[in-house]
Amino acid sequence: MGQKVNPIGLRLGINRTWESRWYANTGEYAQLLHEDIKIRDMLRKRLKNASVSKIVIERPHKKCTVTVYTARPGVVIGKKGADIEVLRRALQQIVKGEVFLNLVEVRKPEIDAMLVAESIAQQLERRVAFRRAMKRSLQTAMRMGAKGCKVICGGRLGGAEIARVEQYQEGSVPLHTLRADIDYGTAEASTAMGIIGIKVWIYKGEILEHDPMASERRLQESGEQRARQGSGNRAA
Image (cartoon, rainbow, N blue to C red; front, side):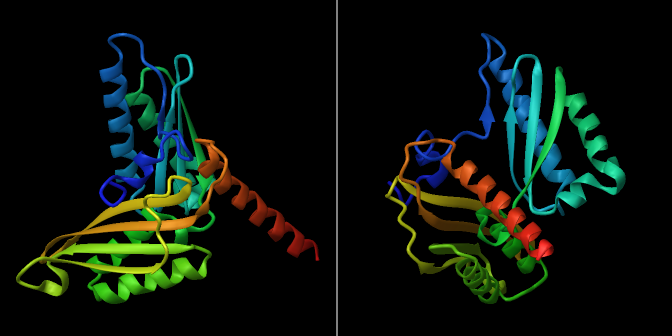
């Protein structure tokens, strides 16, 4: 079971929470769901080079708050905040109520599964050898503090006639342990030989408390701690 199911979906309500957080009245669910899909598709397309990890959508009363987790917030904001205002206006055309757009910086993109998968996909599209790209990502993730990492690539690897799947792993990735904080991401590389699929699992340690927001809180605390360390170094 743990080997097949999406590890984030398996842990929802335990140490992970949903990326769409809202309740719908009778007859509104389909409309709000389609709005969420359009919002994510539009942001992923426009922010292709901004290293977007995930997009969280919350809907308080007659409002919509979109939070974008990105490793390059400067690319999203643009000069003097011009680009982010264009994005907000584009979101306003999709959503009926008032829209708020927030940015959260991903401090360690090397151990964010979605960003690692997209990085490998970009390397494969630039014709980097797939084994080199996979092993380099594994080593970088372990060096940045991951407890374990697994990468799977499938397709016509190296331009082979017959498609196959290759897998590399370092450390432990306990997919059956529900208290394990496991990040999961997928990406596709469009090469001349066809599509190559990439899956990445990153194990960041255990979360002992039963808290669906624990994973996000840990991410935010690591960012605040790094910011405090940076200000301390400048003062010294």
